[in-house]
Length: 353
Ligand code: GLY
Image (cartoon, rainbow, N blue to C red; front, side, top):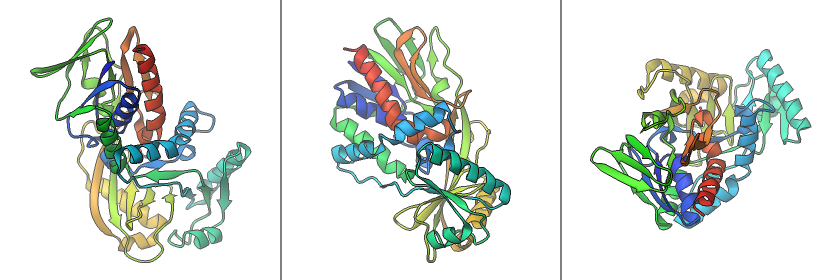
């Protein structure tokens, strides 16, 4: 079965890898280079209980996808021969005032009832566990199954694994028009075109730029996230993701930190701003006072693809079984990549059988 995937971010590369493993003949088109859209800015946090509301469909998807992560990372690393940074050292959500502490304590109670390994810590216990956290914290919630992954290394490993399986990656190619027939799709980009049995739209915030004759794509809009890459100068580098009221901080094994992220509805504007940086620096200093001594390594900006209801859009277009959507993952593209790849590849491989 021949399949064209539009988009070579975390979702496109994960789907490409899963499809090649299933024996499909895959071509991936990207308007930039693989992993240079939202994926390159992502902090790679894997934290469904911090991102989703209790008892929500998003939580269910996130928990299922997290359970696939060990095998997903191990498989991509083994097949590609590339190392992927991956740690399941938990998240520590820190309250800096009483109201936030009450919210986190309530969350802690329902998580424990649901059988999740979560513990409420008072500020003295936080000081013993993560000495860099502000001494004026009002306590925090540790969720041990959470973690983070190095997104660049993961995207590249998935791409190389898919290539070893026979996939072709072409960039820069901005796919523009799609003509769908019952058993074929034809995708054009300028003078070039590709014909395949089926296609997958995994172009994140840019998904709507594709024109499909006779159909309109669901609205996905960009929500900007700015992040700061810092180098920690001093003792007590955090050992796990620290999540405060206004930022989260991811500690890498090389001694650097990612501080994220702003949430801004500013269209396709990928610039960083003074206001965004100020917001992140203030939030990081309130949470980890000694981060004021850190040096600034880089600023990253990405556009999260937000769907109208905040849920990912995964599955065939109405009345077009050979055009499959895998977009709109908003804040959870990295977390939901293994589950999305599993759903999309199972569907398409069955369609082609
Ligand atoms: N998942 C974190 C973010 O989108 O900022």
